[in-house]
Length: 73
Length: 183
Image (cartoon, rainbow over all chains, first blue to last red; front, side, top):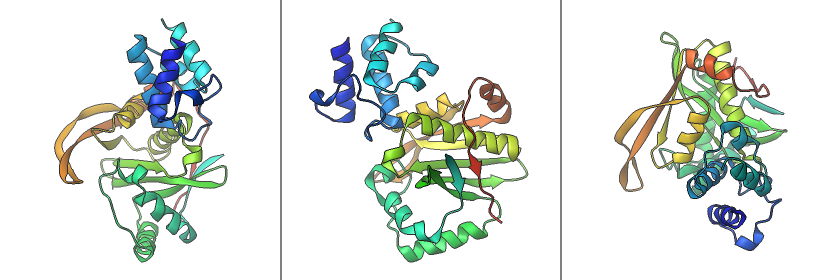
């Protein structure tokens, strides 16, 4: 799961997988509002989950994203 | 702090650069070639317009983007709107939600509008999703509505009405943004 989410974030932001860590997140200029929506949608699709709106807004890091996806499985 | 304020003449060059940048213009209906003279005329027109409004979005003192309401109809109390964030360092989902919710609060609660619409190029699915998050409905698709870069594109028309905003606003919380009035 973790690797899958790392891959989604790297793919959508167009960066090398090695740049993605648990603390990587919305402080990056690449992670803007549209990337945020794209990342969440892709994680929902690939991991078969639906993330509630309030949890989507609260995501600030890859670690948050992983926790939200795991919590909604 | 975020606020929407009047545009300064000293910001026209920056706005011109934003509006002609690929990352902004690829999702807009047009790909304009702007000049500083044209920008000055545009600012004069904005300042003399008694109904439509265009603001600079300012985030923590930094000019960040442009917000506009257009096709204002004071009889039917409706308008269209759009915005973009040119300053990459401030772009975030939280800012996008805050701007859209505050615009609806301003239009529906302060200006007492009844209907607000936005049209989005159909390929821009993230912005369509963003508007839905904020309470908009998808009204329909205007087929082949925009000629851009050598072909026609579909446009998705989105709307939110005052009663829908009242229902939505009770379930969301956000810090208030001020909208400066033009005299």
